[in-house]
Image (tube, helix red, strand yellow):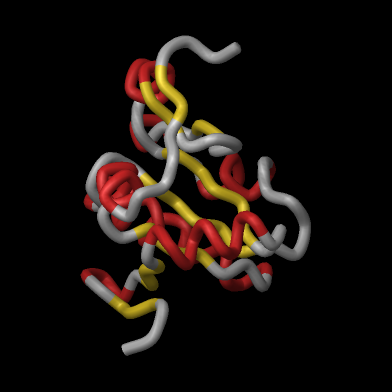
Amino acid sequence: MGFFSFGQSNVATVTPADAQKWIMAGQATLVDVREASEHASERITGAHLVPLSCFDPAKAAAVMKPGTKLVLHCIAGKRSADAAARAASLAQQGIEVYSMSGGIDGWKQAGLKVETGPKA
């Protein structure tokens, strides 16, 4: 079905491999919706933290590079799908919102690198 599909709640999803391509090309901003303790112990380089427990689409949009897609991730994909559904209103501002399928676990399964331990 291509590089993205519509899963639950009509949320667009993107594979970790395609999300990484977008990020490397400067076409996407990655936002981690896990909690701060999860992000501190393991994270995708360059991901911005906007926890689902206090998720506000405006906060997510505020960390975005202009003209990029918003890619949300969590550990496995459920919380990021919830956040993406909450952020659907950003489409009115021309912002494309995606939930990364498989979350950070899917990212690692795709052979992509993560940072561990305290942030430098």
